[in-house]
Length: 612
Image (cartoon, rainbow, N blue to C red):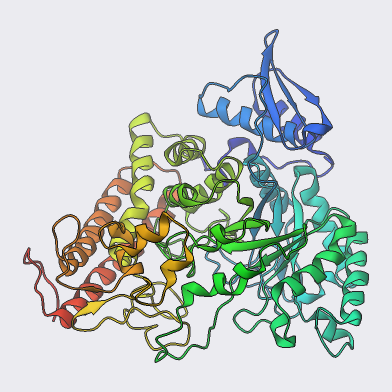
């Protein structure tokens, strides 16, 4: 069978010429080599990213802005390659969000924090180190699904990555930006909030004029080198990162100071809201980590400058398998907000276990308040592995993220099916087998790891594999408090009060055991093992059943995978990782079931083996 492409579009296997300088030139190149149809382009700059496709006198015509015609070209080519009808009309297809971002967590020495696809695409040995042809390939991959911003370094800015905004590194940064630019992709940089202190200023107080002046001057130098930089990304006062709290200031003070340095250049300041007490004493029963973001930010609504965007994780904890939507999204109607999700499978299988994310995103967008979010960001799953994403199937998440960032209402199954059609030459039956495997993968993973909203039973620090009490006495605020009678945290007004952060109808929905969805019950409530779930099973029996079913479903996934005519090397890679997934699922099933059996003393009603 033919060697597979490294991406989802066959024509991206051929290298793009380095001398193409505009999105229109890229669009023309892609169409000429891959469409098989006559296609005209009509550029209307005022349309920006938007486009529409018509058919006139036997040829397709793509009308759009400078980047819009490029996005239209890729959508046309996708339809033609997948055998889908081309969507014609004069109503523009426009992205829901202006900023559709990937946040890479790459470090300058070449590692990637929470990276499962090899070393950094951008750095090695404390300096820029990249293959220009691979960066062009990445830019084409992003443009093909409508992504337009990439932050190239870790939000935890480790030395010497702070030099990205210093004179020594700026010429090389400009060269990298020039590779992405023809594809409509802008760079963003994570910055160290305390950076001025490296330059003789004894403080990073945002209200200190010396600090303000330093950021003004340094930002001007950065934009002189990269005039279209999207802006800065900041993690402040979080997990030992510096921030305005040190000086008795709030996060509006800190963010606005940086935003005003960016404002003359059209830059955005992306300020992450992942702020909580990471040195909590496990004996403290009053501090509830999911409440932290709301406490720190809700009262600041309306205080942020118009080029500040607060970036909020989809759930209030930390990219767990299942969480409710963060209540902070409902609490700041007068502030620009961005949704942050995680493509990197930190808690969802490390790009070893198969976990297709689109069904999860559908649930998130279902509960987000309409029109409150103006940007979207995803922690990247990229690395130097030949296929960019480690597991060949992990590419479905990057692909679907782009389509979802453009249109949050898109159908998860159709995103996955389109990826399958574009990536593999399978017959119709095998296509549907792979689509079903991917669509069900999230549910399967949830069953054998953390059903019912129960979080943080993962191996500490690594976050792959089971450790039911690993985080129970740790300082991270990640407790489930399982004992011989019950498990979970009461987060109603009679407990920590977390449910009170939600507006109606969510407050009542989650607070009542009668209406709280079973899949979130252990997130919001503390339940006895003999509590009867909505389906009539006791809580502990449901825990047993889910873990056994998850392992059985993983075995069925392995059987399905063995029947697919995947090309090399994808076939061998997928099979090797499936063997690791089977082992992982088996460990989760046995360890978690044994953990709850030893606590509760309740045997499995179906007589299956649980170890004593």
